[in-house]
Length: 636
Image 1 (cartoon, one colour):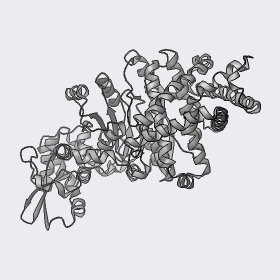
Image 2 (cartoon, one colour):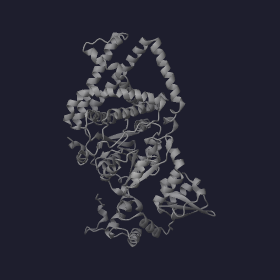
Image 3 (cartoon, helix red, strand yellow):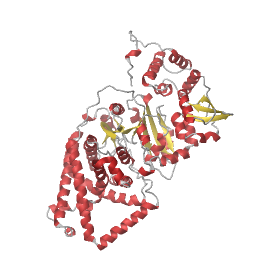
Image 4 (cartoon, helix red, strand yellow):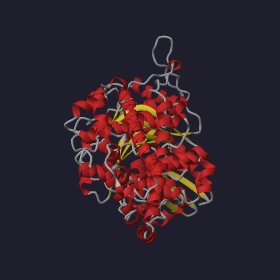
């Protein structure tokens, strides 16, 4: 894309002013080294260097003016530092323990040699010398510096420090805030005790159990209904685009793209990421894949990626989850804003600009921006249409309402963008939680941070097959339970940090959502009662409680229809209106997922039930092109 330059960089004749001092010398060196681009283009790069505050390597390579070798040689001439090859002359193995590998990666340096009292440091950017000296402190009496390829430094850490970085990825989140204590024998023992207690109560006092369950379900229905009703009446309409000028420079954005058995969709994913209209010198796309995912690894090896897109291999471990992979990959990113996309995502091309503007205009309490999610294969079948309505309710009604009232936001696992500083401060993602997104949303809220909602849309593939839909939904529900268990270890502290409203909304989001699905076998027959069919199984429940339960159930179903109608109107999809009544058959499917989630919570808590992507996105390529070539408001 074209980049607007400040007026002060041009003279009265409209021609670029000539560089002076070090800038001119650096330009001349690059031209002598054979860098691509005319002198005017090189001048543009140097002006951008001053205006955007970027170091020359990322800026000039991002603009496509030169390769890494040319830049390294030019930097060597400017800084008078020699160049070494870490491939032909690798760092001394005895020096590997001198620094934290995460720190070395962040500042792009490695301890290379020790000569007497002098420690020789290989680095990629001479501007970091003072910072590196401060970090190393008294590690050695004297320091000397040499230059090495940035890619070689990263490769060194990935190869020789993989075990340390891998272990760190498993436990970035503080133990108190992590679900990693819910592993091994403990959940199985707790599950066995709870199952025994439930069975004993069902045999010895069935009426008491049934009444208790009726009260619980009635409370959950009322709470869910109240929350949805308030959100429906107070949710913000479509937000106008930010118009104020940027207060700060555009941020460097790193996008994490976790891949697992995605070889069939990688090529289309690369094309979609290439369509993002954000300055490539400020963009870093990281394709994150597992070491044991041979198919994806081999496919990526054959791909020719642009400079701003690269591969990160995650070492194999007994734990294999998306949050663990992102924790590992984050060490190798250098963006100020960290975003996440899924393998099948097709974001609107200007989404990153919208996110950057929102963050630029937000105060320091805003930790992230959650973009709107929608589906491009809405018309595949009945399930995909219902799934589309459900997502429209969540992203077009519920999330805007939660933002308006400053309540906890259960983040989505994709198209969410974090200020890196805050993400690091909170301990990144919990590698042991299978809904790391919802968990992180709660951790942000209890730490006093907010999440903004954006109508910048990312289009995904709806899960349109019943069994994969159940598996995906069971993972979400299991993660909600994990999140609830983790944060309710210290309920008084949670209440103090979130306030009463936040505390109650958290209960509704996690336990209330699970209850609404797990209670389906008990409440669904109530439809028969409304048509005069007797239900002897409920004779043990006091009539007043039973009638209240029936009324709450019918009212909740009606509210969901109204909520769906509002969401469909905001989505501007009138063809979905006549599908709304069939949602009464869609919600009960979640009961199968709920019982599967409950079983796995105690038996396989960290099992990640993988969702397959790219099943029919080729068929919908024209629809994807249409949706991502115009703003969401134009969608029909």
